[in-house]
Length: 261
Length: 146
Image (cartoon, rainbow over all chains, first blue to last red; front, side, top):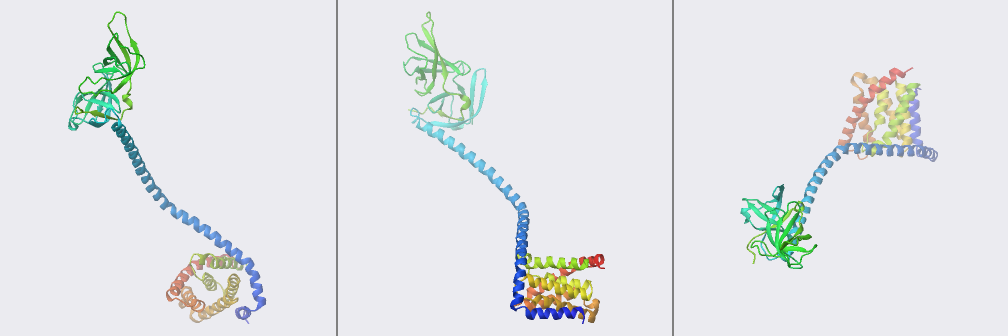
């Protein structure tokens, strides 16, 4: 009998005895070795499959990352826009709540440029004739006087700040009511002059507009007295004024039109 | 003897994969039967029968079905394969054809109820695997046969 037939007979015998208790016992004993190995192979293959899936997902993740970056840029733009709107809203609200100017007509304007020339500092605003702006109008920020509109173009205008030597505004000291004229003194300072000798004015006094200029409302803050200049032989005295508004920090201002009560 | 060791090691690996990895991937191929038929085709009648018996035994020990089913099926298939090979010759009864026939028969016997599409697709894939196995086993035989 050849090996083939012997193996076939043995396999038939195994099949017939497969259900018998001793064989089942032996097989279950063998399963105690094989099943953990099979389980290990399965787990290992799952790990390998997980790694392969991870590698396959990298391309998709890269694309998603690109999309997320795009969304982040858009979101950043939106956040910046919202922040700007909030700032604008706050500025407008503050301006509307300003007690002295509450009932006056104001044109909101953005500062589009600032120049420092020999005649002082000039601001360029993004409003002009088309918005109803005319030369001589007061430019304010909250309750502070920023400057006077000087040159007006169709869609822009130039504002002469208070430190310009040819800017002359009637003012008074808020505490003593001493009257005078503020003229620019270059730099960041101005000079309050033509104060009568018998008028009282001291360092630290707040200087406000007197309202004598037809286009400039009364009560707008100009700045503070830093130093009082007085000489015995003169009949008028003067005071150095530190201006309240720093033009470099301005972003949005308001032009007060002449149609106020 | 080296060939025996190499073939049985391969059978052990395939049995291990067939009872753990392949089902988890949704592949229900009897790769070990394909291996047995390929070894039978590439080597001698006795070696083929011995491989079939050992492979069937391994699969029986690694699976939870009735013990002896695979041992008997593989040994029987290996013997019938040689009978048919002797009867028709390698020219008419080649490996691909044999794998398709035996794979189909095995699925019809062991899988209940058999799905016709699955049986055909599995048999064709099995034939493809046999074509991958064959050059490897032939190379092993050339190198390790003593």
